[in-house]
Structure formats: structure tokens, C-alpha cells
Amino acid sequence: MPRHPEDRPDAGAGGTAGGAEAAGGNAPDPGGAALPEGAAPDLGTPEAPRAEVEPDYKDRWLRAEAELQNYRKRVAREFEQVRRGAEESVMLEMLSVLDDLERALEAARTAGAEAGWTQGVQLTAQRMRDTLARHGVEVVDPQGAPFDPSFHEAVLELPAPEGVPAGTVLQVAGKGYRRGERSLRAARVVVARAGGDA
Image (cartoon, rainbow, N blue to C red; front, side, top):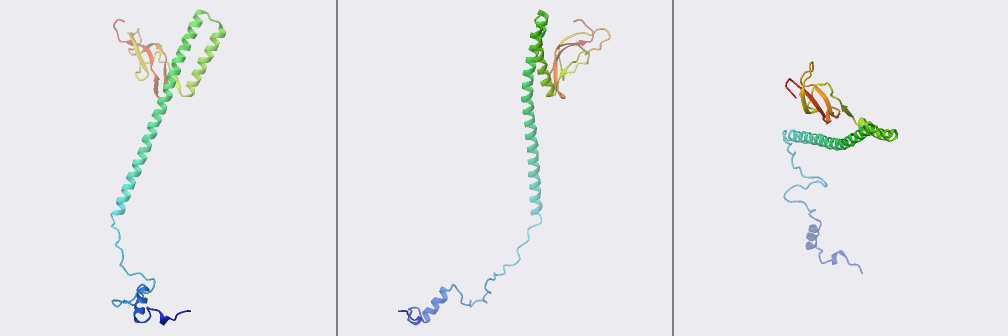
């Protein structure tokens, strides 16, 4: 059987007070005017950031960006140097094999070897030269040119013949090779010197 509101134990003066407390403070605040529903208290206008803060962050960002760009360039340079060094190491090995093939051809011709054998070795040597040329490798032939320590290695000095300036390459004892503006293997040369005996 339903009970009437008057029958509840909290009805009356005590019940009214309890209801106001249970309602979460909907009763008017005796110390001030009630705020409209949904309104927030006015805390004042926030203080504007200082003018120097933004330039400071901008300078730091620019410095970080410059450091990142420098790092990328340095890594790219180092990678290129490592790659080029690895390539040139293999090319030097190929040049050593090419030297052996050329010496074998010279010995075979001197000994009167069969033309079919020497032709096969000659084709192999030429193929190696073509492969090196595709990678920018060129023969250094300094015969009669001034001695250049960047591309030549002097193995012997002889008195300069008449009419030949001192420092001229008289003979090439070993082929040299270059790749672009850099020496891949210095040419071994005999150089003329001014006066004196051999």
C-alpha cells in the first residue's frame, strides 16, 4: 500500500532541510546573489604573454633548424666519402689485375704464344679498361710533361738531356690513373734533374 508523503520520516521541518542539502546547494546563498544557471564567475582578463617570449622561441627554433640542416649535410658528405672510398678500393684491385694481364700479354708476345690465346687475354683486359672508364677512371700518361706530385711518383732522377727542362718526366715506369680531379694511383716516373751525374 503506497505511503503518503506526510508519512515519510523526513517530512516536515527536518525533511525540508535535508531536501535542501540533498539538492546540492540550490538554496540561495545568504552571502551573495545567486549566479544564473550555466554562468561562470568572472575571473578577470588573463595577463597577456610577455613580448620577449615569442622571439625567444623563434630564435631557438631557427637555431635547431640550422643545426639539423648542418647535421644532414655532414652525414651526406661522410656517406659520399665512404661510398667513394669503397668504390676506389675495388678499382685499385681491378687495376692490379689489369697490370698482371698486360704483363702476361707482353710475355706471351715475346715468347711467340698462339694468337688465339693472346687475343682472349687482350679482350679480357680491354673489357676491364672499358668498365673502369665507365666509372670515370682515366690513364695518366705524363711522358714529356712537367712533374706533378699530385699525380706522379718519382722513382728515379736522371740528368736532364740537352734542351729538356729540369723536372720533366723522361720515362713512365708504371701507369698512373685518375678519377676526375683526384689521383687514383700515381704514375711511377723518371724525372730529369738539373745538371750533375746520374
